[in-house]
Length: 452
Image (cartoon, rainbow, N blue to C red; front, side, top):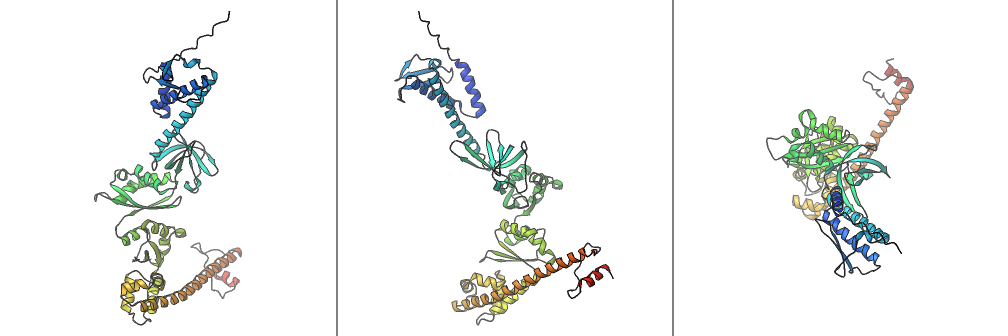
């Protein structure tokens, strides 16, 4: 007599519902979606068990409260225990559940982090992968491309790092989360964290220009006249700005007071340099800034950084000149234009007041501007532009020669100083070794420096 097959164990529905609750909490997936996935997986397993391809033949319903499972075939309830479906059907059930849960988790991640684009997130560094920094967030793995990293920054596995959530992409089977520490908005978000007035919209960040790892200029304004925007951002004894600088590993941050006047704003943006005069040319979008000789290097900044960031912050093309250069340009422009019949010195002065301060500017703006601003006839205006163009070429040649001479003089000074130092000459008390006259021999130069 054949032995009867042991009855398939019944599913503990209460335990199943507790597990679904736990998965829903941990992976932040709606429990109803998980139950719907379970119903689909159960129907797929039933089709596999009965070896049918008809997707409408079986369906499953699970009670959302008790967890009771009912399987229908052609809309008629059948007495099929889920546990009796067999190994192959159970494998089908498992595969369907895994795939559906992956899809739902990917959708959940996409929805969650899409809402966090532009916000600061904190993660743990895992590794470098082809130049990109891989960082683990709360529920996902994100990456920071080399282009979004601050130059010179290095992290080790396990380091906690704050970044800007820059972008979230649906890459088919996974969600790609792009992070950044080089984006200007990262600094803006840090100001919101460190300066309550910025977070409360009392102080507004009006403009920002950044060279990651080196320097940033931030223009701020206050909607409350009682609140000093610069002082609030700096904090007591620099406490607030220090926290931001420390987060950026020493990147310099200049707080600039915003002003609706472009001239005042440009002057503020060029600080700490002192500005003598600013001339704006609306036609060219250029600001010509005049500074004293001793302020020139400060206004330009190291490798041109200060003036470059000021230009990006204000939206103007900023040109820095000394008073001599500025006056020389005006004189050359005036002398050139007044050689054209019909153009007077007063007209040249009017062009200077409009921000056109050199023959290069006249050549660039063209004849139409001269017609509109000075009321010249087209032929006279064209003649003026042509005269300016000819003079501009001459000036350019002269400037190039002067630049070459200065560069040559610097090289000669460097070479002669090195020769003297190699010969055993000592620098002066101020630490320098001044160049002697060109006509002196090396021995005479050394004797002058050594005092004998």
